Length: 383
Image (tube, rainbow, N blue to C red):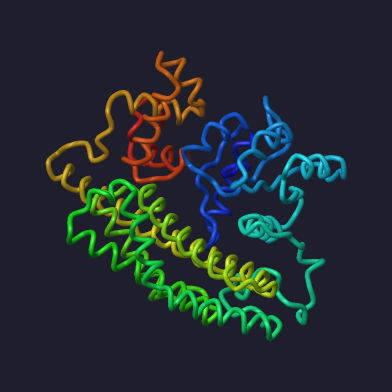
């Protein structure tokens, strides 16, 4: 989630970060208050937070965010002063990045925050001969530097135990997944398909950990295909990702249990490295699931539009109220202002905006405005 009160900066950051293959911007908001309201909806794992915000400041927001232990915060500031950085760190920020920094520095800090590890700026980076601190894999998809021999032995031992325990782990994964609606309502055939897929996911993860590699193109394609299939089955993307996260948590929990049963101090760094690598794999896989789901949803929406055009109907099927809200959005009004203008609750405006984005097949308000202008959806008063 990106939080910055300057609209242009916010949209630029969201666009640049979204273009990264391993970063998914779930929201871009202009105030700390709006960010806090969105937490339960978009469930970010990392927040890029501007310090100088209207209303609740970034430093004040940190005091609230520190209670959300699963969220890492990277503070983004134009103030290079040590006092600001210290206040942010004391408030719970994992990293502080200057707005004058290179974009690679910002992306690196976000990646480091996602795996809850320290971030070293490139100018101060480790020497090539030093062991990589991020796990056994490198972010670029190539194998990371080998650790000490005892780490390699411990890694192999732990993965062998995980493979030997595959049946028990897969049963646990399946029991977790089928407890997530609407997976709890699947028929026998669909349930068997999902169960087979979760088993394949477990096998791929173990294979990647053993070979110290990222998911290859064919594996990512299967995740995309699975995401598309869930979209066509009418399963929302958030439910799909909840089920996937349950499966990931089960694999991780079992890895921790197996490491603990060894009662070997050398297993601690091995478990840490494997956990980080497992998170990388989960990030790649969930992004592929989302891509497949969103592409299938867009294709279905495009097909619906073609059918409506063939029937001489409005291809976007916007209601009159949605058109009024879209017009207000095009004028640059916030949800709160639009609510006052239309005499409705702000939550109602948010629902309308969500429906508009879905019907137009876009993710952001700026994209919706562009479609509205190019498709003539705003009426004659908007040239």
